[in-house]
Image 1 (cartoon, rainbow, N blue to C red):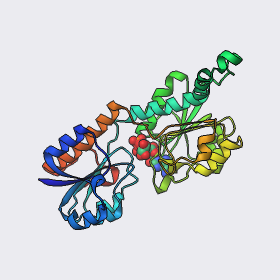
Image 2: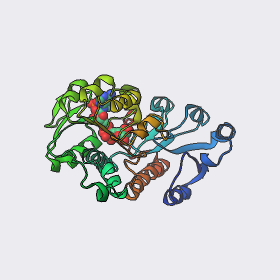
Image 3: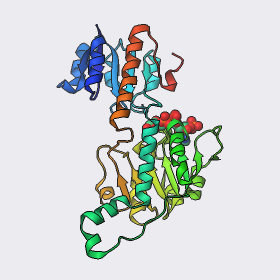
Image 4: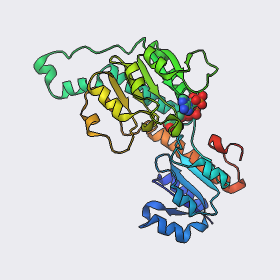
Length: 316
Ligand code: A2R
């Protein structure tokens, strides 16, 4: 039987399907993963991992016969795809099956910021409604201008989900897309013109801290910043400072720079809504992602092809 290294967790269904085709070695059960791989890595031909854990370069180096890495998640910035490709290792991910779910999370965060969902929930629970009367008014989320940073598969799903709110969609990416929305070649310029900036680019070097102080200040005191992409996309320290002193209005965040660590200063703020990276985290969507992750491995084992390679490996 072919041997598979499992990095991170997996559902029972995933384990059952993988177990029918592979001998599974769980990294989480190894006392010293590097030592184990140094001794046994030669036998591993397939890796199942996730967008958060990826594959460490030292682990990859210890598996000379590796053929395929299947990533559970659409973001794969924790995997060195160029190094994999150079070795003939194909990398796959799970695009599309999570578009709608991450879109829902983005809209949820935006609405929670606008309608002060957490503040008003606390208002009821604490008894202040009864003691002090009606809660202060909030802002309407209708008819806002929303700038999408990264109008790809998920960005388009977010735009579609916002349509019922009478939203005007504009976007920034490196290249103009074939869509009717206004395109901005300059992110700061877009931030200046919108009420909400939603980040949904990949992580990695090209987007590292792309939402910097200048962009944050352009979004401004009445602006709302939503991040459902990667924590690295925003300069977190600058964002926190701006939220603290009112240069930025609100933030709805599903991702952070050093997950699962979230800075205390951010956790203390009242003008933020914070989620523990659950953009795609429903039973239904995670099952679909798990299925595609396994399908890629099984197909590769069968005939050497895959269903959803990352773009860097599309022609392998
Ligand atoms: O820049 P373009 O024209 O390649 O457009 C892509 C855009 N993008 C960027 N925009 C500005 N600056 C960059 N350095 C940059 N790099 C990429 O992000 C495209 O419009 C969008 C990504 O779309 P997809 O490749 O379809 O990705 P998907 O499935 O929407 O997922 C996006 C990310 C994942 O990579 C995870 O990190 C996260 O959502 O869950």
